[in-house]
Image (cartoon, rainbow over all chains, first blue to last red; front, side, top):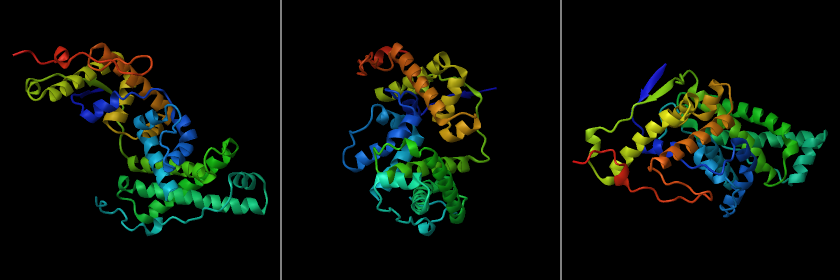
Amino acid sequence: MSRQLTTLSTQQVEALTLATEPYLSCEQCFQVVDAYVESVASGRPDDAPLGLKEHLAGCAACADEADSLLELVRD
Amino acid sequence: MTAPQDVPTSPALFQVDRTDAPRSNPDWVAALAVPGPAHEEALRDLHALMVRAARHQVWRMRTLVPGVGAGALDELANGAADDALVALLAKLGTFEGRSRFTTWAYKFAVLEAAVQVRRQAWRGREVSFEDVTMVFGVRGEDCVGPAEELEAVDLAAALGRAMSEVLTPYQRRIAVALLVDEVPIDVLAQRLATSRGALYKTLHVVRARLRAALADSGHLPRRTDDGRAEPGRPVEEVSPCPAS
């Protein structure tokens, strides 16, 4: 079975071609995201492990959970 | 933005308890690791923390499950907190103290609650996983407008060709399901009996292959080994529109 895809939105094009190097897995993201979120809450957003920002840009689920964790830490 | 109908608008059930017990990181680990009265008290406090974080996450995502009432959402949050507590205790030995223990604990509850809400939102919905034929063409009417629009149309067409040519059917299905159909990654992982990590890895490879193909065709700048982008060809050279 095959269906036809005839259009892509600009957002979809951007999502499909996003540069996510250096590679960081979802499991590695989970391991380090708590410390990173505390860095952000302390005004040090550049203290990100290698590849974490790229991962969060490319993984909507991990990004949403990091945002939520940041809200909890700031609350 | 207003909440959809049937979504509880009062967060009364979702008021989070402030149970940040004043324990240091080593105190938390010691209390949870050794049986005794302090262990029971720490477990209760930890469970309260997990409920707080799970409720927070469920409330954030409530618009994804508009037909679910406040009571059911709270039940979902409590179930997620229970599951997260079990997951955390299994990983207690991996806590390295790089963040506060409470932050470390919250992330387990946030993850579990988020996964459960996404699955609840897609319960009963079919996920299309058939292969996709890319039939992007550039139509005559696309060949009018500002240069930016022409460039965008051309890039989308080139991307469609690259998806047909450089991706395997499996990679194409994963990419379309996640980024075009917007199936949540946890839902797709469950339906395919795989993991979020495995799907993200596939997506990472897909993106690299597509960018390489588009760099070869001059539609994207090629990246140097240190990650810097080299300039691409001018858009005139890759325009799909015939010269009039």
